[in-house]
Length: 161
Image 1 (cartoon, rainbow, N blue to C red):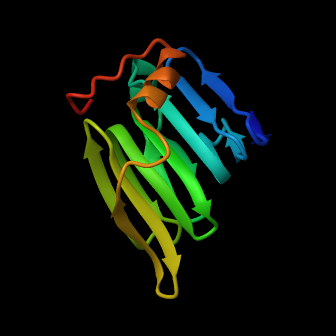
Image 2 (cartoon, rainbow, N blue to C red; image 1 turned 45 degrees about the vertical axis):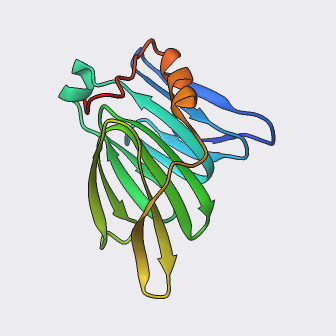
C-alpha cells in the first residue's frame, strides 16, 4: 500500500490490518494516504483509531510516522486516536503507551506517556503551531477496545506499556 489513498464517506468506516499486531480504523469522512514503504500515514481529514501492539517485529524495525496538517507522531507499540478537526487544529489522544509528537514545522514538541488517555491539540495560529492540553473527546475505552479486538490485543489500562 505505497501512496494509496483511503477515503470514507458519511456513516462509513474502514479497518485495515497490518499483520497480526496492528490495526487502524478510519472513521467516517476520512481521507488518509498510506505509504507502507515509508512507514507513514498521512491523515488529511477525518479521524483514526489505531492499535499497534509492541511485538518483536516492531521492536526490531523503525517506528511509523503519522502526519496530520499540524502535527506528526512517531509511533511504536501504542494505542492512539487522532482527528483533524479543522485544517488548523488536530486532536490527538495517546490512549495507552508512549509517543513523541511535534508540530508540522518541527518547532514545538512533546513526549507523552499514558496508561489511560492523555489528549492534546496542535493548533495553528498567527504565531505558528502550539500544543495545548485537551480532554477526552470523540472516543472512549469501548471504542479502542473494539479496535484492539480485531487483532486480539488486550489493552491494560492500569499501566504504561
